[in-house]
Image (cartoon, rainbow, N blue to C red):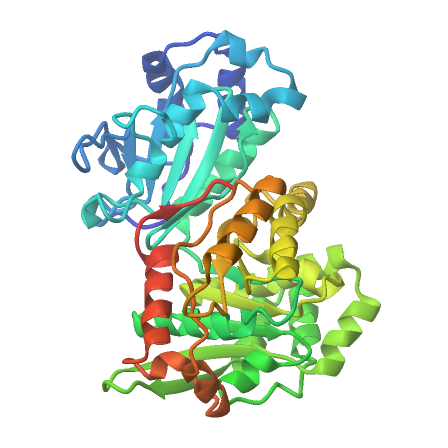
Length: 469
């Protein structure tokens, strides 16, 4: 069996950069594969058993490469390469990303082409159409001018990076990230269900989507960093009133005592099991803190510092879970900003009201791009959060034509072009009963709202879904 850690590379990163710099600005795909990708694989320490060329993985689905750690196991990485074109190489840095987004080479590589027969990374990571033996966790598109890393978590496919220009600075970072993807097990997807307008059921939705995933066999961690601790009480637990564990964990990390830091954090996590009405069971893990400690963070810590701190803390537990959900205050303060900045994805709930809709659209158009820019400037190679769409929450049984039209008008006026989640969450009374009993509503498997939460969870996470927004 081939171990997860590649053997020592025969080619240095400097040689890869120098080789790239020697490639003509107009370069056929076959030459890029033969003269550059071979050296890149050599740098990663891959042998020929770990590299499969143009493998068929489904009806009409043939990525250029599948990369394996162990050929007896599913691949780690799917790669789609395209030729280098002199026109794209000549585009200014300021216009490069926008040009790529509309360029046939990039759209074909990703799988966003108008031609339904043209497949790319999105299709090669499609859980519904690719046999599990050929289904990779990561995807790479590369042409010598642009590259972009993608990630699959169950059915959800999202970018790991923005579109990046290949240059002497970005290429070594790509090599390092590819080596990490090949060596480390996939880590948890971090999600926030959030709106800066309160009262849109963000906490209720977080608890129940997380519970649906846990019931499906996923390892789920909830992080309650809203000073009100509604998520903690919502599942019948009490907030951690010895919250200095954040400081103790960070102190140990500063001393490079990673094992001690992980031990402190692990001991601070609570776990609770739940039974369902049809005889099933699931459990949720919880990391919480007290109101006083969280308010103190807002008073004493700069958002950029807190972002780094929470990223480092999350890194200690990411590999232990499939999904991590963060619950933050609706107030967009320094704490909420840094927490959202650590998220990979955000779902934007609104309660069909004009205010919550406008807040959600503003988050999509302004706040999320700002958070992505913050991470980029902080030199985070993988960038997020990515918007998974508007979620219709607390809906009446019949919305009515008038409200539907008003929502559509606001969406058009505000120029919102992102996704809208198809599943709409009806405001059933069963949800209130669950709150009183401090349980997820999905404990009542026959309730209508439970069926909607299962449908929502499948739509967003478990069946094929992708976002590049």
